Image (cartoon, rainbow, N blue to C red; front, side, top):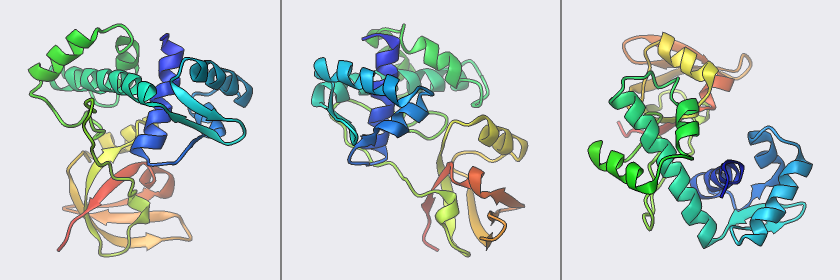
Length: 217
């Protein structure tokens, strides 16, 4: 597989396996990869011929078993590399995505497995995304911060990779596993207020990219 094919397989895996959508909608995949719907449809036909996806025109796609294994290989490489760059080389978590994107296509499975062992067989990358292993079934939270209610107590378990989000989290020293509770939700102004030692007012577009786990009081 070439780099572009792997990029398609990755986003389809994330949408259907991690985000539990029955089908990855064609337009969603196209938007995620910044291509036209026509370009995406041509790639879907190509991937379907290789036995990697099942493509239903005007509806969407999902991975075959062969496609899932290829996606796991690439996503695993990406997330292990991100963790290596942050934990060992001390890169900031906001700057590792692009380098990992380049390296994932070049690193052999042997190298990735060696790095995985070196890092202590980690469960997740720096952003809280699980590091998949062939044959392993894992759960991933799709509960975003903005879906919570006043007085909910939670911890941050995963964040989407967004420059705006990283900037906000870095400026406020907010990180994975930090715990907060909701003190206010202003639907009109599209903000949600969270508190630990300090209080933070977070805009809806940022909160939608922060995924959480509720904690029982």
